[in-house]
Length: 443
Image (cartoon, helix red, strand yellow):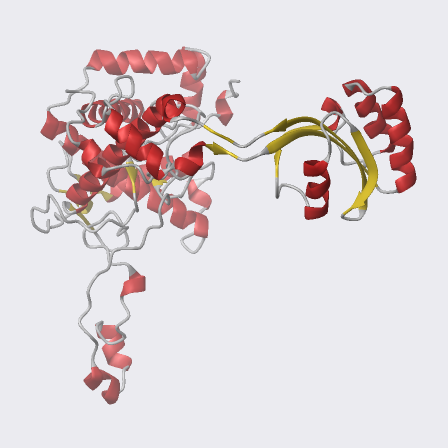
């Protein structure tokens, strides 16, 4: 559904590229020495493309764009407003990561043509807007200039091309050996086991009298429609009437113990009840008793192959994302007031436990505290729980599409940094050596 022009939002690509384990990654690789901040810049990324620095003027424009993207008026925000901080951080992040992306593309020799940008712009006008007029009305209401729009599209194309050159092609998944499939199956056998279960119709009422009346109705008409009618007239109001109360694949433990006992001892095909369980009255009829089962290795082979392939692709993206972030963070320096976790001169305040290492702190400290000093401080990496990741623009979604819609109101892989749905956890059967020989889609 297309929104009115005034309601559309330009999705700002706050460009880093893949799934990364945490926003604050300590720079370890690609460190080329601490860069210095040139005079007049509030942000500087060494080797960050044709315009490695960002001025206060650049920031002011990006602040307006970030506010517009989040649906707030930039002029109405005050610095003590939490929403101001979110807009500010997003603006700084966009300025930094656009330069990371420009720099990475330059190093790789990736340069989208003007024709590619024109084609993408035409596609956006026709698919996300109702043509040229609607698009122009939107631009007039936004802080975007024509050049800024083309820059967003360019960055989206760069992100896509870097991704294609760096990650395995989802349309050409990596090969998985029979040994890998067998190892996965043996280490995750419980995934392929199906416990004993029953398909059972269940009627529930508050009183025995209601259950007796429902039983008479069901005995007259034991079809699905008969059960549905009984549930509608005498059952609990919360019960759905569709399907005649049928619950499929009911396993032990899914219901209270006294109801479970009745379900798993009832003969198949017979109406049982009324009986009382867990303060309610029940009628049940087991339609099918399904014994415990287990998929064989041959039966599970296709699903295991897909799981391993997905794990390989996730691991490759994770690895590249961490290396990319470490590389470019080491080349980024920010002025006071613009320092966020992506800057090399960022220090997580939660790690700074010394109370006398800053001049202002020493000024107010007593003699005994000064003499005691502090233990040597070592920056720590934040602990990241398995599966707790951030998704940032440029990555493919779980369905395989490119999460890069530059314009419009579609889902973007960013409003960040914010946690979203975790990436699938690496299964026990995954071996990091599986990454060996995996080639990016661009090679």
